[in-house]
Length: 542
Image (cartoon, rainbow, N blue to C red):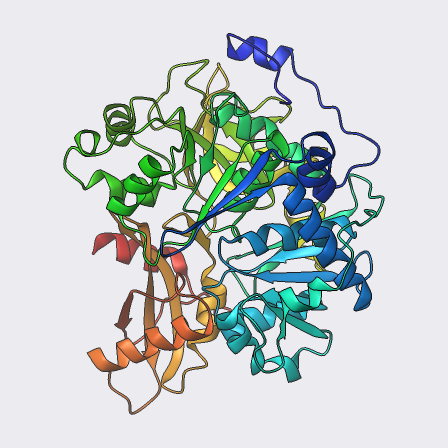
């Protein structure tokens, strides 16, 4: 573990200091290092849709990732090249990332929910050379190949499919040992695309040090993850930073077995049953999952759980959910906070301090988190301002891929502005108050309205579109679209469904508008931009 042993938060902070080595490679650190020390140590457990279980040791992951790294090298992949990973939770997802990182390439986690337009933009913008996917992903990519000149190879984990090549058979002929590329902590490792408020998503580029930067927050939010018997699972997709860098990679680094599962559909009953059957000791449950699970009557009498820690992040938990967690799990849910560009920077930790419902937590050791004004000047305690993180910080992104202007706008002096507003009290507790931008928080996802609006106006019936988040008890917010139709057209329920489906199939299943309202006009600035704050107020009033 990176965190020192401590019995108080103050002792934890005073006893911590960063130790970032001169050379560091995520793939080696989460796989090969363990394979050298304890090759048969359990690393990954995969439970398929039928309940069949496959177990992978660190030696297994090292062998498979080395074969894949050798295969990628034989196809001309060089250090710095980009590799897309378009897969759900499954073993190939883990060793695809490990393989690419070991050879010095840059991985791009991609949601299986993405439609063709969302995939095309990310793959074209990143210049991805290879994509590793399944049959569903291969089908989406088939029609995009002509528009992606850099994409030379698609491997399919489910067997050959058209232009997509069977991954397993092509790996089989390659050696199961690979000498990892010698990377520095600041060398590029991962691009995670994050939605902004205008235009297309931005690729947050992280260096190999990002894993080390995550570890204190991961350990803190799980009451010192890495204890004997720890065993972790999350329903969060590994394409999300919350699944990849809050669970999969840190757990493998710490020697904690990761349990992977693909539910046909997430349900509260299935989650409780899985926690019981797989003897899960640690879990990251996004607030939406917790809210769904809370709807069941007396789950503590129906399932025998053996949890040691439950962490949650993405939205603030209230007192009711904290109390429910204590009754149901027999422990206090730890909240954490961060964003794609700078994650796991604030956390609570029941093992050290009592939770304060409605307040996220305190700065994780090693991260200088404060509240500043727009000029990057720290504000007095209990003063509303921008939640910000000071650089340098190992968890902080390197830059936005090919977007210097957006990178510069993210900072005020040496302070990275999260885009969220909040308060900091005299003890350092950070209270989230709201966003100072238009990002929508729905089911734990942060969704930018700009990409959705751009998609909506491509529909032949749509003249103008404004997209905002509408408050929702279960999802925190849902995506709502206000639509101005082209002249001569009238709105109808069928047209609303058609427009919503248009977005769902082109962008992502979590980004489509769950409500579509036809209006005569949208509130606009003098330069013709949609005034989303007026639409938000209208949605809140509904």
